[in-house]
Image (cartoon, rainbow, N blue to C red):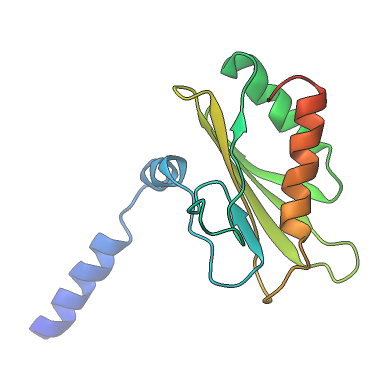
Length: 150
């Protein structure tokens, strides 16, 4: 076996050694940035980026009470499938009705600041015709009416 081949095997082994808990910890700490295309909104986008920025949700109640309610509301949204839930993360997929496109929605709970950061983005295409922004606005309205967020 050549030295280059051995090094390649070692590098592959080291790269693939990350555990799910390490990956989850990375996911929980931050939301992915929006691409340059107008098919993504995020509360972590710069506020000057009016195409992508949305306000985070600000809790009106204790996070331990609000978080399960937020999950329940998200589960009740049409064509939404929850993919991962932890104490501080909800990841879901939403499938469009006609063309069956998949969008990703991620919510991150920040108990210290009493906020929920949110990102909703299309996986493919360039424009979403405002679907992701409308999705977040609908979720915000439901949670405001339930007195969960401000």
